[in-house]
Amino acid sequence: MDPELHSIYPVSSYLLPQGFAGCPAATLPELLREHPELCTHAPFLADLATIERAVHQLNLAPIEPLAPVTELTVRPEVKLFEVDWTALPELLAGQDTSPRQRRSLVLIVPPVTGRPARALSPTDHQLLALKIAAEQLDHRTVARQGGVSVQLVDRLVVEAVHSGLLLAPTSRITRPPSFYTEPPRFPNRLRAEVFTLQWHITQACDLHCRHCYDRSSRQAVTAEQGNRVLDQFSAFCKGHHVDGQVSFSGGNPLLHPRFFEFYTAAAERGLMTAILGNPTDRSTLQAVKKIQVPEFYQVSLEGLREHNDYIRGTGHFDRTLAFLELARELNVYTMVMLTLTRDNLDQVLPLAEQLRGRVDLFTFNRLAMMGEGAALAAPPIDRYESFLENYLEAAATNPIMSTKDSLFNIILERQGRPVRGGCAGFGCGAAFNFVALLPDGEIHACRKLPSLLGNLYQHSLAEIYLSPLAERYREGSSACRSCRLRPVCRGCPAVVSGLGQDIFKECDPYCFITSSSP
Image (cartoon, rainbow, N blue to C red):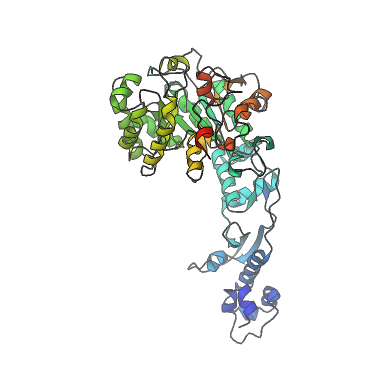
């Protein structure tokens, strides 16, 4: 057998009749159509060879860097054509199938990282994704006409991008060139693919924690305001080419009478959802899950039982453990957050051990001395470095322990280990890849400190995000500007502010990079 013929047509070549005289390999499909007598035992052979040639040509083509696009675009190498037989891509994939004579479509997908070009029988979702990109159709219009959720339409488009059918614009949530030195040390920490709205829909809460940073009276979000918020946020994310996540918070967001209405509306707009709340019951969690499984459900513990219940109320510790067991049973990803103080510093590692196997992720934030938290004692600065070292050592054998505090990166770099994303995946993410929205429309760079950027009921999120004030929060402290870890750190402005210092000029007082790093 002609080696070239076999390399281009690894399946079709075996179906050629014995004694086949041969032909130029590139013209085999045309020859088979002109001489159907060569296909009597496999009448679909001409179509099969056409598909194999198209796949081979794509695999031979040099892989060129993909040019950036400004809108959703069908990859130029994608081929979609009709054939006279069904199930031919499945036959090429080695499946046990019998082609039938009926007009059908074949999709040729170009190579993507680690995978060669391939032929597919396109699904309805893939065809719709191609149509959306080719005709620049609005996702909400498509969803309404099809009687499906926007989330479904968004998801099928994302799947088409990941599978190599479509090209999507890159995220516009990026650090400016002035933020890093050339070449950047952490190029994967300069562009965010997800933008989070921490949405405080109510101040109502069924707890009265001693470190609460805000017990101010604000009217809960109305139905009209809620839908306007979600429309704005969805438009912002689409305009900036990022996936949007709404993290429902409060108070306790579940106490808002329209919580499920807002949660459903977020899911219908194709937004990811999460809950920052208090332990709840089975029926409530099942109702949440039925609408959309949250990315996570975060609850808080402040130490071991006695100390936690002193801070959060009698019985809270046991209710939280019971909730974590329930969430695990229902396959809901859980997180436990601790606010680190002087009084619970020595309880963190024992608590992490007690939570092993009960929660998916455990982490902490340092106390921001705001609101009622100002009456508590912050963790001692002179003990903090050794605390982080001990935490990292314990985390090596306890998979639930997360390294959220950006100052962990000082130790990781010193130890020659890969640094991590810090507080928000990009060091401090205040006004970069997240903002906090309060019930009265106030947008803050971070909920843990007074950082008012504007009001969403008066200005668009895009206007607020692009304002000089928001940019100032993204730039952070001038004291961090020359630091090599700046893209993955910048300390915690909430801690700096709580200690009465200037967040735009002062370094995080807990930072130990100068004295301890190479």
